[in-house]
Length: 298
Length: 301
Image (cartoon, rainbow over all chains, first blue to last red; front, top):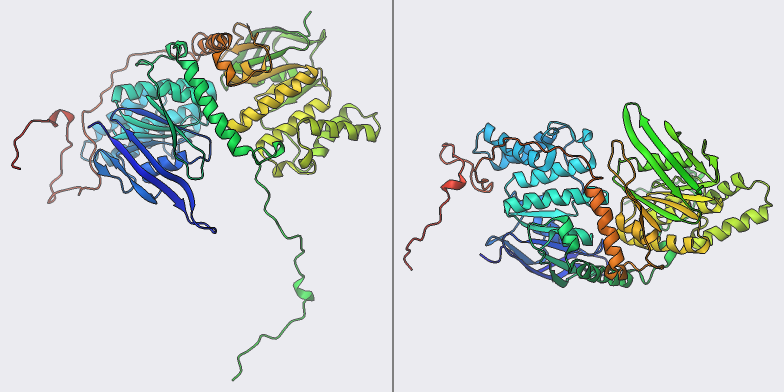
């Protein structure tokens, strides 16, 4: 099976006042089993929309998605998702949070075996001594480690990662990339990850898919990343191709940034115009003459 | 003696040592970036320079004078902007100017504020309140306010960390442009190695806490203005970047102790949740991966 995930002419539209707004148009992508693919583009380009359609969380307007020979119609535990914020239930310990999904997916197994699964994945992401803590007691980076463990523990067919390290500082991000890569290597999972961090994409991916700007976002170009695996940060940074690819990706993003913001002035780099509010005072009801309520007369 | 001198400074909160033996000297007009993990003590360091905190041991001097309290000679820009929400852009900056230069005529104060609003390109937004501004614009106000005090040194505490990638890049360019105009002494605290290399004359990694200390200081002798894209084929940039990242992920990284743990990963397959959970009341057994076999079998066509 060479093509594990097939995304064919995927389109997403929302009905709008001036006809349908096209977010993603004819998006085509094929991912091999065990491949790590990164989707890169600016915020708002529609990359997360593609991911949530693959996750089954957002309806497909037209086109189709096939995973392991089966068309996807809704969300399911065959796709493990790591969101930007870890989305843990605050009243449950890290361990209980992971068990929640494990109990569902491995319902035929005994309790010991289910607990062993959760314990295994929480330990390998570096939470061996903190797995019984509550989310509030964990740092942002540790919470995201729980998020990663939870996704892997379900033994999904593929992993979907939506800017999983977007909220972390750039150094903690590097630590977690290593954790993710290590787990990915051991489990040989097919992965699709959305990011806007060029270094992250280069370190993790086999292929980087650059998306054009929305509306009607498409695949812009696809970059092969052939750094040898298993990857070490140091070796990747010293690879002769690294900075060439990095520059290429940065230029791709910068061109998109300029085409996007050319109409806005420098002072309002990311501002949205305030909504107009009529400048009128409410009428004082007591001063209004009371009118008789009209009654229907024959 | 250098313009800003930090000698053997340590700082603890209770029993937790945050900073250990910090030594740093910065010359006048220098732009220094300090990069480190969040939680390492970067903000503590900047608070010590700002005079908001006092060190446990060691000393800090600015212009040969010991730093004992906050003062208008040090302008600080915080990550969370710290603007007064009920004042407009103009009033927020004016407030700082009135504190620092109460003897100026009101016309002079006004002109001074206007100049600084123009400097950060906020002309059209001068009468807006912080809640009507985007994050990037708020940080511009904060920067203009710090500069309007005419400080001897500018302390930037992760000024761009809360902004999205695009706005961050725009503001980095702005900071460089403004700095080029009067070349003030700047200490920039950041967790982004690239931001440090793009802006500073010198980059110093701060190791991960507890007991964080400064790593080797690396001079960035790359001509300005520096272009984010063109830097990539600058061998000097690649080398500096590698040195800093190596330190922060290696010697200066978080300390992990690796212990061998015996873990069991059951060899079972996940169930298909769309299939019925039981057959005729009989409970199913989990499918073990070892039981899954692929065999060549003959089939009728």
